[in-house]
Length: 161
Image (tube, rainbow, N blue to C red; front, side):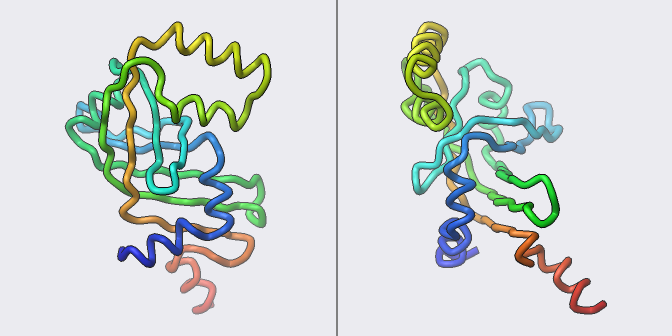
């Protein structure tokens, strides 16, 4: 996918709404070679999707060897409301002392006031270090099923029928 196509998919207003959320599903190959799909909190920097984790987490160990990932962020409980952003990319890992800025920024999207203060106190007491998993999108596709923005093979089925 070229840079213009990637920017168009990631820049779609509804894709931006999904990127401003806080939960996604991350797919990667585990250290044993078998695929995994796990829910993760994330933060979109405008260029990278950042996931933060403990240095001892299985995903950190696996991604150090196999950095290829896929990520899905979706919403909607009916076909008419269903929207999804699919991303494939490469993960870069960096171990930082304390808590990553992106981890706290993501929490600010769903908490404030005393709840946020307690959360921050708790995570700072828990994590001596974190791994910042920075995912560079190399391919992305935004789907809005209710508006007819669907995968090509589905559009072909509808048009052929």
